[in-house]
Length: 459
Image 1 (tube, rainbow, N blue to C red):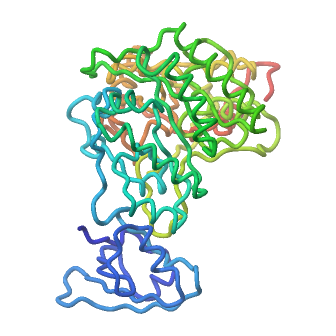
Image 2 (image 1 turned 180 degrees about the horizontal axis):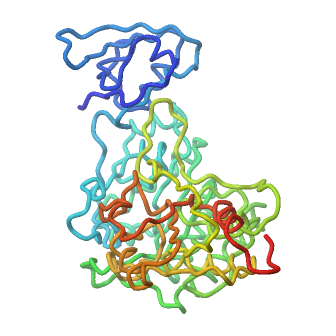
């Protein structure tokens, strides 16, 4: 079991006033050694908090007593969300993208977790194959909600085969338990052509309306296949298969809307792009909370970029739960410092293949034919990988070099994590200086408004 370490102390907070410092180890809170940041937050929620800490260079552990208002945060951040051990995934799914990563990437990128705590904190999807009765008791008692569950199929034998784990046939019983106890759960189905599409997908979707009718949302996502996959049975959708899956999802989603008065089943934006179909309007997605899973993200982006006046229905990215002390992690980690605009020269927008289609629709709606979009072909991963968030420095550098290296190049911050691309390089690894903007339609609109306009064109 690791000891949580203070990584940040807010100025003038109870933690700062008590003398806590970055680097202090928290040995116990109110006499208890917490197992994770969720338990830490609960222990530190009261009016009196008794901390036992260990400080580097000090021969003795010290006790710090803090008095504050009930519910007032201590004002510190901890370096890890889980202090015992992250529950790693013991499934061996042939469609798992982690198995499709190139060698030599950052070690953290190869971590496969199946931990319900990370599902609650960060929106990670769990298969529930490592879920236990004690876990269920804790989730229900402490109301750790929402959770995010990978369903993939409701056919027990097929699910066991897809997960390559016999517990895959029975672990959805925990989904029954959680829903029965009123825990908010969002489901995901990754569709693999020839495996769980067609009749299997139809059955699974109808089961989400019937057996699992309390699910808050279900996202249907197409399989991503990189050149590094060693699974001969995994292949990308054809355009016709994408259209067939989209037809099925929309039909059953409409049936659910008629049955329950709200829509819960949604196809990922990639399906519309692969099938060459227009996105539904933003209102179609209602209150779906799978925005970061690529559900309604494009419709939101287009709405933000093309709507006049204030944006009243903007969704924030990230599932991150407001748990005091929890560190940003994964997709919720800091991206990169945003750049200041560099003059009024029309920008050159760098984007993945899928994002380029969305950008093209925005520019057409705004009448901005002076703006160039550079599609960054993803050779780092290869296959059918075309999402902008997986662009790497190597691919961006090659694209800029082919373009000539002369331009006001702009990238979205979604392809950066703590100022690094997935291939490990930073912005200083690019051949020219680029601008970084937030990954939302409003940021793009602001960029375009600041750039020179074509004669007679207004935004």
